[in-house]
Structures are given as structure tokens and as C-alpha cells.
Length: 417
Ligand SMILES: Nc1ncnc2c1ncn2[C@@H]1O[C@H](COP(=O)(O)OP(=O)(O)OP(=O)(O)O)[C@@H](O)[C@H]1O
Image (spheres, protein in one colour):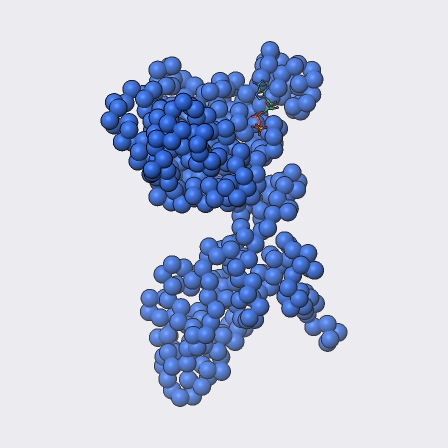
């Protein structure tokens, strides 16, 4: 079961939501509805679910409805229609007391403008949520200290917010949210007010922190690069609607419509698209013990001149050429081991393809993709790496030798024509 589920959520701001709904049902646009009724459609039929420990990013341009969605999740804004289920419980049906309890125990929010109390120390700010919940002093201080340590602010407990840099102030905001021990962290443009360098650093730190904390994070941003970096999945919003939900790779490789395509077209795909998106099954694979005759048969069937040789645990040991295998048959050997050449280039499924650029230049052989146990997960060849790279870069931007190779590979057999 998803930890959070949003079903057919609507928020209409204004005097007469029912008039807006009538027009929405007829397919009217947000602008038309505003013009005719004076109502603003903030969220239009949004549905998504978030899994436990997932970082789910909601991304969209200004006015697309991100902040309204995140505020509906804890009912800081009352949805007009729809359901928000947290651990299967509909927050729309909760009493005031239940809602408060849920906000304190399950959801914590980190705001763009830090929202710190200026007259309280760092520690005083970090323990504030717990204080509101009535947690005894000693316990709340201990939890707040732990949270401050997690965000790298140990030693700053007695400072005041004005004595800290923007990045540090936001760490206090994060510590305050973490101190409550929530299952879900709601982060509303949490890094958008920071300088670019500090912002990148905070993104890295959040990723690091999340690797150990494993919270469920719902992160709002208008910055696509931030979304692609942080999100396990991303929901893209436009005019209050969720237009696509997918992993960063899915968003880049299979944009749902022209809007998303236009949005992602300038992204450096090579940093996001990983080998797993372009690898294919290795065509010919043999176990050592199958011997050279079986290997030759497989190579013939697949019309290949090499075979990937695996040991008994199916770990890749190297490649055997058809000439090597023929030689082994002549020598009456019944095992492939003697001729396995292990000078094969390897990579892993989660390597960004931009990092394979050098290897693609060095070898015309496919690169073997190994899983974490050294088993052959597939292969990735130069054509598919170059194909992906060329979608990102203009040809003039490609290294000269790569551009030449691309040219050669895209016009095969020209001389023979
Ligand atoms: N209190 C309100 N009253 C009327 N309209 C509102 C209100 N709050 C938001 N809206 C409208 O709802 C739509 C969605 O706004 P929202 O703030 O959720 O967008 P956003 O994607 O978070 O944008 P930003 O990044 O600029 O905050 C916008 O058209 C906005 O004008």
C-alpha cells in the first residue's frame, strides 16, 4: 500500500466553485473559467500515489498548482473535492484533533523562506514542533539535538538564525521537521531561496541524508534539474493538472506530450540517462563448461563472431572469439577457459551514459554491463551511446573523433554503393 495517495483532487479558489466545476466538465480552460466565473482552478483532477521511502518531486512552472497540492496534503488548504489518503486514512474525513495528530506525527513541512523564529536559538527552533506537541523538555531537546547533528549543525545550538547563512538556516528548518520524527517530509521549494552553489550542496546533502534516513519525501520545485537530480519519480504539473508521472529517465526519454517535450529538450540527458535505458541482452553467452563446440553453434546461430564466457556462477569472465573456439575444437579441449580474453570493457546499469564517452571512444566492441554480483546483465554498444549523446549535443559540440565516428556509423557501406 502506498503511504500517500491522492485521488481526483480539485481545488477551486473563488466565490462559486460549483459554476467552475460545470465548466470544467465541459472541458473549459483555466483562463475561460476565471473569465466567466471569477474562480481560479488551482488543482484540476490530480491523482498520484507515493511509496514509502520514495522521493516524489512535484514540478511545474509558477502558477501550475504545486504549492496548492502540497498544502492540500496536510489540509493547510482545504481541497474542494477528492481524497488524500495517508496510510490509507482519508484526511478529509479526520476530525480537527485527528488532523492535528497526523500533522504532528506523520507529516512535517519545510518551507522556502525557512520560517524560523528569530528570537529563538537554533536549538529552540529545532525543538519548536515538539514543544507544540507537548513533548517534555528533556526529550524534545534530545530529539532536536539529534536532528541538528543529522543536518550538520552540531555546535550551533545556541546561535540565533540571523547569525547563520541561508543554507544553515534551511538546515535548521530541516532539523525542525526531522525532530518530529515524521514519516513524510513535505518540502515546498525548500532550496529555491538559496544561492546556486549552496543550493547544489543542499541537494547533495539531502540525497546523502535520505540514503540513511529513508523518509518519504514530497519535494516541490520549479527547477527541472533539481527535480531530475532529487526525484525517484517526478510529477509534472501544468495549469493545475498532472500531465506526467515518471522516473527522471522516463520523463526524458518518453515525454507524455509536447509540453513536457519542450520542457526537457535542453536537459543534459547524458547525466540522467543510465546504461540500463539503452542496454540490450547479450546476443551470445556460454558457460565455460559447455565447451567450444556448443559455443561455435551458438555463435553461428546468432551470426556473431564472439561469445561472452561465464563461469559456473554466471559471472562474466571475458570473451571468446570464433577462431579461438575453432582452435580449441582442433585441440580437443572441452572447456572454454584456456582462451578467455578478459580485456573486455565493463560498466554497471546505473552508470550515466555521459560517463561512458571515453570508453565508447576506445573500443568498437560492445561494453559489457555487469550487475552488482559481476553477472552479465546485458551489453551496450557504441551506436546506442552515440545515438543518445547526439540527442543532447549538436554535432559541432561532439569531440571531433566522436563526430567522425557518428558520421561513419550513420552512413555505412557508402563506398560500396
Ligand atoms: N489563495 C488563493 N486565491 C486565489 N487563487 C489562488 C490562491 N492560491 C493560489 N491561487 C492560484 O492557484 C493557481 C496555483 O497556484 P500555486 O501557488 O499552487 O502554484 P505554484 O505552482 O505553486 O506556483 P509558485 O511556484 O509561483 O508558487 C494559480 O493560478 C494561483 O494564482
